[in-house]
Image 1 (cartoon, helix red, strand yellow):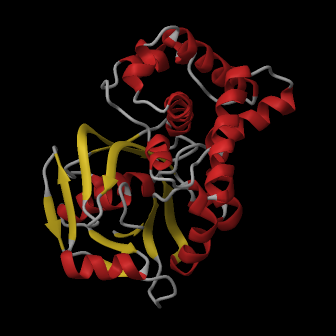
Image 2: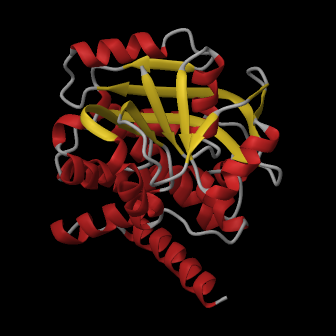
Length: 307
């Protein structure tokens, strides 16, 4: 199965690298600077789950290459529009497009561009980053990738993808309830990134500060209320499981949004908190904490653009 990974950054580089490590037919669609870096130094992954350096195949946008069986999209949400144009020449009639973006809004965007039949569901949990030399650093035990048909069906193509992903040195699994799992991750990451970016601190100090548990509980409640109102297929106990999951995170765990803010980079605020804040407004739902957190992120974005 021919696999195209869009980007070779913290997420694409890690999971694409693991697929390449097991002998998969993997190609990375990268920009010229990253392409040269990979040609000179290889794809280097330093991970507590096993490190490796491999020489990957790469292409640049516009190269004349036949369509791929699977396209794995793992870019930031604010890069998605550019990605659509880049991958279009490599999308065939039976290509599976597997997005690993945070949030949920990207699914409809991809479906409108390429048709509902080509898009499958996906998510990942991995704490990874690129260092100044382009090495993928992965320092936590979690390195999970989940995929499945959005309909929940066990189709021939999804079973074939399951077989292609098997034996990889990462926790990759097929789910027959992927849409619900995507919403559950959305709730988790929106809460986690929201409070850590607001407090400018890892999750541990946020949890342990005065009123920390009350803040987390209220914010989760607001987020879940909005998701339920718009008809998301979330579990009855999602509030409890989300809070428990946050309380089990390592003390120094940071969200990728917080890391982006520390580097002065754009954030996925509109894709995560903004999507739910807009929905809350449409349904007249009072979300004071969500408003505060989203407002904080928008102030950051304004200041960043103004230099």
